[in-house]
Image 1 (tube, rainbow, N blue to C red):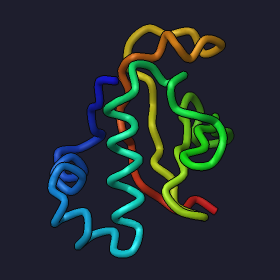
Image 2 (cartoon, rainbow, N blue to C red):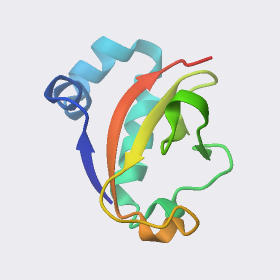
Image 3 (cartoon, one colour):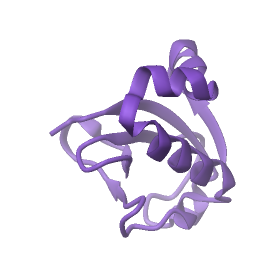
Length: 104
């Protein structure tokens, strides 16, 4: 899948493994695996909805966004880019990483 980032700062933190470890500590290894899975996937449908990585549609203030588990509480928040059908995840071939957060 094609990945983009919500900011240059986030892109820099997630593209450099040293910065991932510095900024995300004990979540870093899981985060590296999840990003590699996103890059390797052809569409969002290729990311399983069972743990790990447990892709799931978000509600509330996260309209049109999905969460990907990093740890028990931390998620990668992603948003589809371009035209897609929300009912058919195989139409989502490009995503933007919005943030890595604990929204609980």
